[in-house]
Length: 339
Image (tube, rainbow, N blue to C red; front, side, top):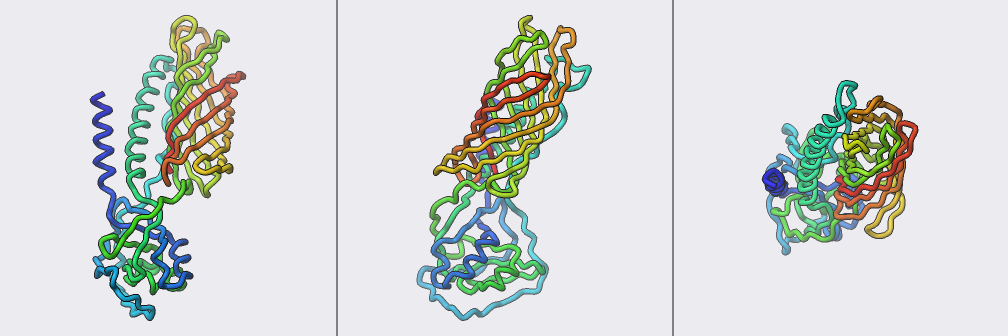
């Protein structure tokens, strides 16, 4: 309980350290450049930064500021400010095999797996706290709200939102706005966005077969990290860890290391559905059993359901089948996915 309290307190401190500055994604900046200048501030996509981009403050506008369409642009040729922050994505998957060494015992494998799971959950709590506290959605701004632009050529300029044209939007490598520099109204959050890095931890129960042939249920965990090139398809490294007592009341421990392809194409409001397939290797260790250590190929597949929590976090349920050691097993797990 003391360790859990420390983790939760730390996550609250970290979640309170996000910056009071927001990035406008490049695609949305280009879309805004095609919108009539006087309407641009009505629905602006903004993503809160972890730490603020290092740019000089701009003069604040207010609700009574006149909208001027003819731009008067001031360009600085000084050194490019260094962005110090960015998005936090999913954590890395993979890692050292737990309990898979020929000389290890099932009990040792289980003890190491418990430590791995604790560390993975700690990382998940911190990452979820950071991503959950950031605003990623839409805001209403004054059309003359200052936008800090850092170009692909290293130049920097600041100009009102209403002055940005298609050429400027294409030139900009980064566009940043600050709530302190004009009227600011947060609107709705954006829907779940998977594109980019992802990290997830899931817990539940799974069936594990002993070298004796008996099948039983035990606690199971899956730790994943990977990348979604688009909203619907991702490639992830996956670690499965499970254990139970066999009929001799000794420890049976299993670990699997697979590369997994996920697809979640079905969407119904906040619900998303799809499935996964994966392949890799499996290791089984069983104490005080002749031929209690075994290695085999591993093939896995199953269904997935997700429920949006916010733009970066989803509650995920996994219903899986696996073929290892020439046998079939099942598992059911629930956990958090952070994108």
